[in-house]
Amino acid sequence: MSVKKQSNARATQSIRSPNDDLNQQIIRLLQQDGRMAFSEIAQQLDVSEGTIRNRVSGLRDNNMLRIVAMSDPVATEYTTDAMIGLNVATGVTPRQVAERLEKNPRVVFILWVAGRYDLIIELVSDDDDALKDFLEFDIHASDDIANADVMPGLKNFKNQFLLKQSLQE
Amino acid sequence: MSVKKQSNARATQSIRSPNDDLNQQIIRLLQQDGRMAFSEIAQQLDVSEGTIRNRVSGLRDNNMLRIVAMSDPVATEYTTDAMIGLNVATGVTPRQVAERLEKNPRVVFILWVAGRYDLIIELVSDDDDALKDFLEFDIHASDDIANADVMPGLKNFKNQFLLKQSLQE
DNA sequence: CATCATGATACGAAATTCGAAATTTTCGCA
DNA sequence: TGCGAAAATTTCGAATTTCGTATCATGATG
Image (cartoon, rainbow over all chains, first blue to last red; front, side, top):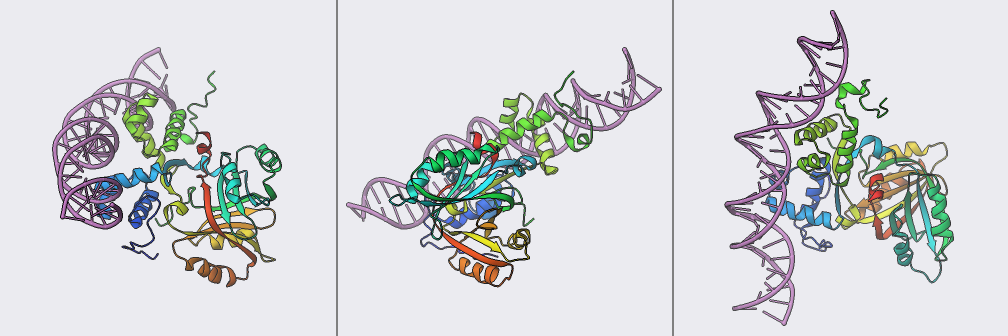
């Protein structure tokens, strides 16, 4: 399957956790069952329960991991969704624009990229005016954006974070 | 009299959902924290712990509820992350391409869009060759893609999980 | 080499979950 | 309206898990 680098004490010194591979394995188990007992995870991964507890709470505190319930109807019904490719105005950094847009709760994803655009963002909402409002107030009303390519979502085929995650069963 | 849509003794009865409002409230709480203790849920909703336990296991058994961990791959792994805008070849539908790419576990997001591209996908991985391999085997080796704009991720400013309910916190 | 910091572990106490039986509620039906 | 069966809820002691905290191991630092 994957590469499985066990003791790669190299650059994987992540944001705030050593031994990243353990975190990945914990996450992998919790992705299958978000309620799996820490003690069982510990047993499967051959470490102590306290370690699992510390790791999980650490990951959660840093918003790197979220354990939530999803009910199929709800999860499948978020739709009005658009990807927007942005080019920032001259003299403005992508970071500055990102920090402004970040505050909008409908913007759920902001990635600084190289290539045709400077930023790619994802906009979701449950009401049809959201896109219009966003364009009006967050894009056109600001002079830090030179160009915005709006690509309305038509159908979401895959989103690792939404259900469907049940693979490998 | 009562409009509540309380116990619709129709087909929904057999599954296991009498008092639907209670299920909704349970789900609402678990959407905020998938690990909330049954006893605490019970306390908040003023029913017994056993009821919560029965409801949750019933919902889960019937695949009406899923409790999973979601991790931000970019935050948890040290990954290369790319957004790729795709245009499908003539005579091919975005759906067909999506169904092919969907199988690749490194593709975590596939959205059919209107606009400059047909599909926008997100690729994550834990090693640097992944992008090259993906382009080689999944893009160039296939004749269903007319164009691919690769935009390597530079920095992820925001990646909020795309759950409707997370908007209302 | 001592010290400090960080993470892992150990362990008793508190809390939670579990299984199963008892109780209550629901609902069809005469 | 009342009865009985089925379903849902509650109860409760035991098993399990989680939690708080102290201790240990490992590096980094001066």
